[in-house]
Length: 250
Image 1 (tube, rainbow, N blue to C red):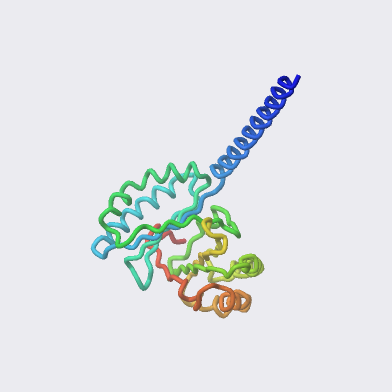
Image 2: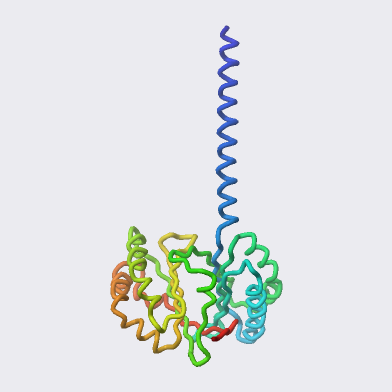
């Protein structure tokens, strides 16, 4: 009887372990499916040797144009920094991880040129959009007469203040997007660190950006940046970008 009891106990343990294993696999599979079906947003920075800048811009331009032709692409844009023209940025968003990974196979030219053209390693940043907009909104363009300016601001919030930052921006975002001089405005959170954020602010001109800085609804954001980020001044995280592709205009 004791032996039968031991066997019965072992069977119960085995069944329990099997159920646990299947449940765990189901959870992991669900996570993978969610990741695969969810939108992907990526920012890539390239620090390029001066003699390779034009070649590198051409490679990014080719990739952006190819990406924009794909139905699964939400947006793709290439920029250089106003004060450091050899620093190039690629912004892209895709409807799914599968589409993103498929598009990444089209980066052979960029990958090959990177072997000899870069000053330092590529910086890749995956983000989650906190105030998402549609594909049509991302494809919104400036006018031919505009002198477009794009600002990105990296924010590293102090411990415990990330939720406050998101709340402040959530309240201000509709007002920011209603400004006549704003083409697009997005707040995103870094996937690798939930206390880090980046804004993407596209204006029709420098004058429109100056108006934004004096726009009353921005004051709570400025107050947060002056008091609740890890490193001051917050302007150190600001980058002024000039678009070089696709340069679509109304």
